[in-house]
Length: 440
Ligand code: SF4
Image 1 (cartoon, rainbow, N blue to C red):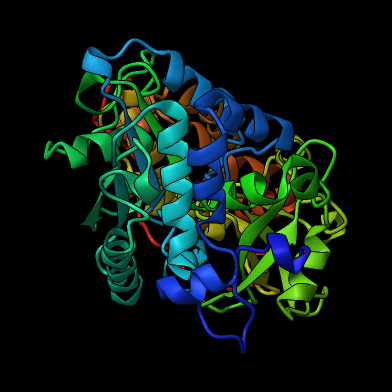
Image 2 (cartoon, rainbow, N blue to C red):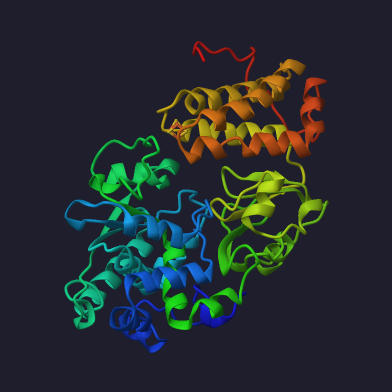
């Protein structure tokens, strides 16, 4: 757990900071008052840069660099936007939901600080409409902040005004993809868009737009109020601060939320969540969510950080860590992930739309006892081809399950080629080899 004064979570047993009064009693909105009264937009970006804040939404891009790009991009009549992603694309992730339910004003204050820094007067809080307590708490906090003069016209008597609109949607996994999100806010069909140009230059209504994860933005009040150095006291050499992680025990679908300093190990995350894993109870630990990579238990000493996870084929991603039961056949697990992802793909580009489906089909054949050695070669080829040719991060990350399953659990695949399931759990799912009419 990080230093409690930089923690985003309100500790269990303590009252949630949902009301304006409760939040301000804890020093809330001081950062925004200070920023509007004493700091220029460039000062804010410089402080965020000094703090080394990286995006919590999976990419790990420097938050200050993104803010600078938006602040310096050409905008018609100076119109810029901020979009706060509080959607939790992986429905098992509790991060944005917990923030909105227990500390919504930290998110709103973060949005206001970011908007002031980039020169935006309009922002959107994008969330899952089906997570009703979180959506309702966020909207109530928004109304109260406007009533108290912390948002809206001439915030705290300054010349800075900001309107925040809450947008509640339920659009599956791809609803959390940055360009899809902008299309949805505009009322258009959900399809990812070609980049470049990036939203930092041509975003919402073709204007420069800062799209930032709710957790990233919720860190801004701490950075401004306590200073970059205090924020940097938690975290690793490459990534400052902590990450909200959802940790699932073997066989569980509901996880425990923990706040882990970057650089602490995967084993520490499991301990913090009181999830015990051993060879007797778990086969692998999947790091990153539905597009995350499966790591053997021998890798539990790996630091949780963007680069160290990437080296092993896993990702920070949705911030979900999931222990798989000891009797999991990893070929079957990879098939289930590929099947799920093939259904969530928006279908705009061929490598992802067709490629992920073919991976799922090949895996169905393998676990049904119809696989050949050549299928493994084709799967390896697809694992390179799909991310190389995909338009958005969904396709780039979609191969992590299959790549890591084949890398660390190769015996599970070869056992199936020899006609047996290594854990005795697989049932055939198809009677014929996978065939596709699609032309690649
Ligand atoms: S990579 Fe997949 S999700 Fe992304 S645009 Fe292409 S088809 Fe859509």
